[in-house]
Image 1 (cartoon, rainbow, N blue to C red):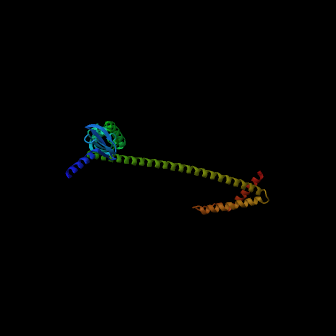
Image 2 (cartoon, helix red, strand yellow):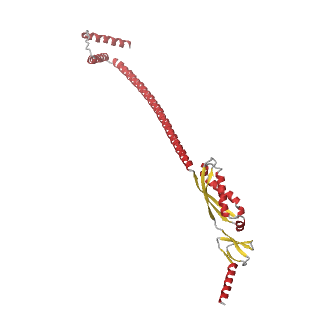
Image 3 (cartoon, rainbow, N blue to C red):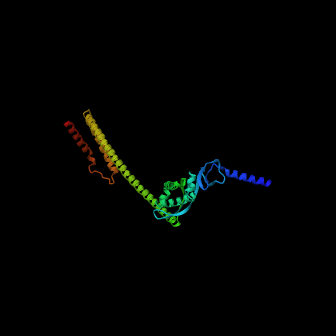
Length: 305
């Protein structure tokens, strides 16, 4: 009796196990009845008909990330590079994911590889680095278009590594070194050119300043000489006027005569003191006659007045 009871209990548990289906929150289940698609069970508790219904497929509904292995690609400028990446997908329709493709994960990886190879061939090596975002968007669009019958959605694609061959890297390093040297030479040439321009501008400005200064100096000297001549002329005119006025005064003739004698004696002494050769006039004793002649000249000038 105990064996029969145990057998019946196992049968009941088996039937209950086949009858009740608990679908977890992170997945969906595809149910087949007698080998034919029946329904897609969403997360929760479901009841099945034992021996008629069965869970044919279970699909992850969370976002999945698939690693795209590195593959060799040829760029537009015929440079061989190795490219790998990551593709992010999500199951949107469990029935299509079950019956539309044998293995949507492997198909997504292969499609990403072929699309990536095709898109890399449209770009030069430099553009594969600078236009990585555009490349990712293009690959996502192409994969999503092709995978729509599979019931999956390609969310995004990321190019992870772009690795040129060792020969290409060596060539690029030489090219970058040459470019750096070129920029350095251009910078030095521009600096030398600017220096020469600045020096010439400085010399030109210096010449202008010197000429302006010399011009102003000459103007100032000329104005000074003119002013000096004007002052001397005014002083001479005033002196002559005073002399004429003094000559008209009583004893003015004697005063003029005495002044002339003093000037003559003073000038004669200066000549004797400064001359390298001493000269003594032979008629030095006749100075009196000289002064008498001067008296006559003075008298004549007064008579003319």
